[in-house]
Image 1 (cartoon, one colour):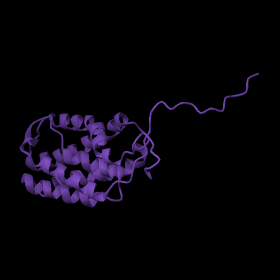
Image 2 (tube, helix red, strand yellow):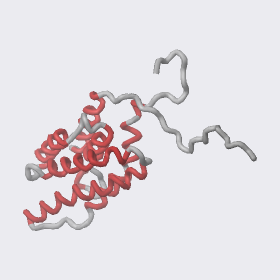
Image 3 (spheres, one colour):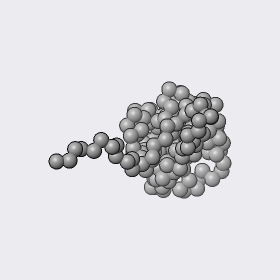
Image 4 (tube, one colour):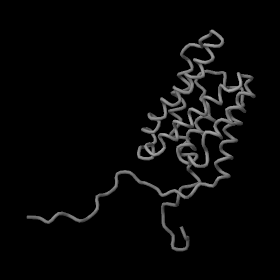
Length: 180
């Protein structure tokens, strides 16, 4: 009879320890995402809401720093910029942030593509609420092209995660002269 091996199994996926995120980096990325949303390409179908992706990402990864108040304020800024009814984007972003904070512990266990599948209903729900409100007050329905924006936003989730976590990644090769 052979004794069971005590050697650890090799990992199939590399997991990196992340450095703590700098609060200034969070707010700079949110500000840059807001500026990207101000560009005039938002009326084209298939262009996602970059600010919504960034808000959901930071609500998932840093729920104590970026929460519903930040989402509400950025939503008001988007409402003022787009000359929309005051509160449409604020409601959408606040709902996104609330549900992202609810899912933040669960999402940490999944790969980026699985996270994208979990985040996709959040984007659909928040956009649908705004369109339902707009349809009720205006009596118009924009069709189903808005769903393409939600799908593209979910597809961009892994890329956004890779970009937004880039400054936090530790070097792979250890160095004796580096403290961390």
